[in-house]
Image (cartoon, rainbow, N blue to C red; front, side, top):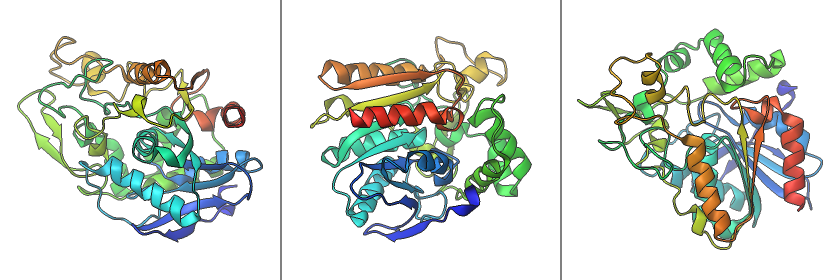
Length: 343
């Protein structure tokens, strides 16, 4: 169970990175990268399931878990995280490896694929952050809403979740995990759930970490993502994976989406424009000015372009799964990973 796992600490040439590690010499190397408001512990159950067939490392990104708490710049955050992971691979002596990223970790993995293409054997994505940022765009091509970064990043981070982290409110965080990270119908093992709550509570807080700074605006929803902190790394001015279809050498890409995901979808409950359309946030100016962001469709179009450029792509839409696909459908996800990386 969760309490039986301990992290190692790796001093890289960039920072000290905490990571779970399962050494399996001679097997394919796979790095698993967690999402926002979480930590590496969320991937430990999948690590356990995959450990017979892979040499595994599951790190905490800077700003999360037990990794050294260096400040997170929104402007360079994706590249910083990508370079951090490359430095971890160097420290482990990994020349080439596959990487899987969940949610925010998906964007980090995509950035690593863009900046360190020759290091990767495959790119695996799980409910990835939209390629043109989370919030602040209007169509599948990532066209910006105006002013740029409006309604994205820390400007739309959940105030309730932020307060729960500050107050160490385990009950509220437990409820969020059980009802937002996964489908409410999925009942987690209680011990793992408590370990996941611990992981969320290890997130570093403040303008330099979670959620980041906010700039006031006179345009609805009256807040713009700032230039510091974790959530702001996902603002569209700073998160843009448009170069992914052009990477060379090409690597195979596998992407999972949960069919009941309320965080990453084309009508996301985490999209301020969807909340406005539902009457949950007053003053929404309507779909012509602030349409819901087609999050999943943005990724699908980017991957379609990659495939048209000659790349290998497989997309799996997983039934009975929300945002935490690997938690809800562990066996299906693990089998798909094993089959894909054997091919």
